[in-house]
Length: 179
Picture 1: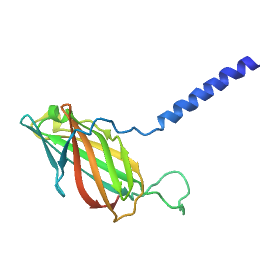
Picture 2 (picture 1 turned 90 degrees about the vertical axis):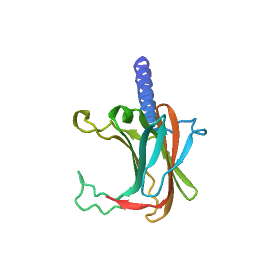
Picture 3 (picture 1 turned 180 degrees about the vertical axis):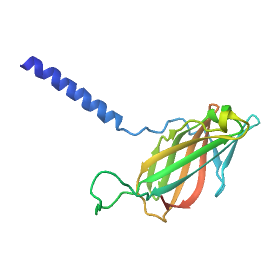
Picture 4 (picture 1 turned 180 degrees about the horizontal axis):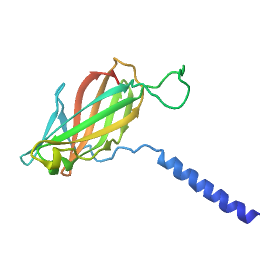
């Protein structure tokens, strides 16, 4: 009996550890201390230039007020969470150039609180069959803290283009409700 219990406990323990480590959020990478800092103009995009090629990058953050439907009581009287969500984008003249740009971190500050996360980069979108025209990549960081709507926050996004690192610094803005 004892010989059967030990492997069971071992498998249960290893499974618990694996599950716990998959829940750890992806941390932002190190090595951006020497990255070039670019100020993003208000309501616009930053221009990244490398060897005569140009990329435009921007982003926004909002509280998620989208209604949720699904299994459960029709009238759920519990308070619904409204997490902070970030959407980032980078565009270039061609699909090949857009594929060389990825976001590696987003960091937001609200007073003395900081929230950072490695965003999910999506595949590059382009005109059908890669016809001439601008191509772009979106990235999202979802599930942040629920800071009060209307409060001022600051945001920075870490962008890697052709192996070169940039920190996009957005001007402070009021946190809005989205959805």
